[in-house]
Amino acid sequence: MLDVGSGRNYRIVVDTSKNRLYLLCSGDFMRAEDNPHMVEHADQACRRLKPGFTMLSDFLEMKTFGLPDVAQRVQAILKSAGVSKIATVWGSESFSKLIVDSSAQKMGDTYAERRKAFPSRTEAETWLDE
Image: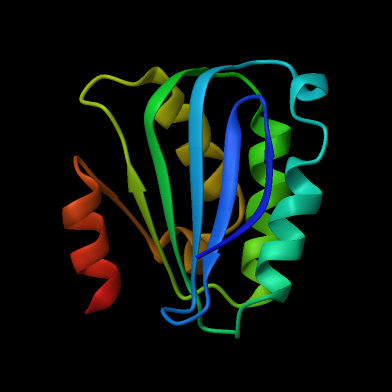
């Protein structure tokens, strides 16, 4: 696995052998200035992978997310780079899921259909590996 970049509330890693991008988020993700390079790091990660790559977004450690514009910009990069499947992992009660899901819906049905939510990383990885 190769670290691409990180900020106060995220870390982006790629596994080129699986052709997979990993986004790990934590804490209170409320200020864009705390994570100024997230969009750039997402773009760099996509460039290291082949079209048809998969993505696992782990939001288990994230408390709040209040940046729908950042989510939408990252999702636009993923879509244009050719992501085929996106597994998201959430805690059982996460208001932040509504914000991220809403941003995904704005990307259109073909993007939203590539996404599926899971309660654990193991289940998410299994689905992505299918």
